[in-house]
Length: 210
Image (cartoon, one colour):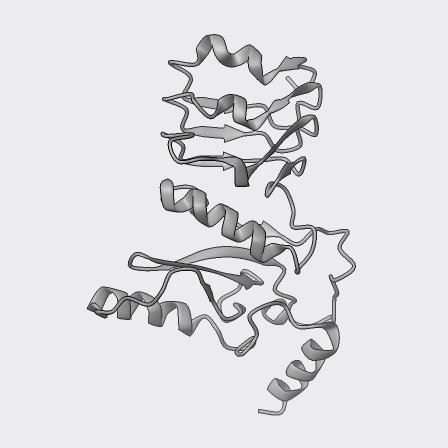
């Protein structure tokens, strides 16, 4: 169905009943993400590769997408698609955080990656467990949310950029879940973002000497 044509507005006849919308790589479909914001039953959206669908996740307000659980967006929507740069990533993750605080299931088991075209990417020809941490993910200790860079291998995560403050009362659940997050930080300890290629080679040299 990649040859489908039309607009997101065409789906409004199904506004009250539509639960899932899958249009990935339908490049001839246009529209704005906000046109789906008031669909009360819509749980899953998959718009990957829909380059003519635009929008901005920073414009999603409280009450929008009230039933959403999964949201796959194209790069033409700000905050969707691959990450354009390391510098822009904190703003993107804060925008997703706002949405995730409204709908906890959003961004669950989901990662974004640094664009394959980014000049910040590098390959130091090391074991996959020591590759550049080029993906981002949310982490959660009880109700506290944060995000981090990772290479998707255990021990290959950077330090967590916490978005919620530490709770005043540290429950056993919080302590256990926090420790699990901390245990995943070994090679990139002390880094809150991917190291430069030179920093990476230096750290790799230090680890090989241990």
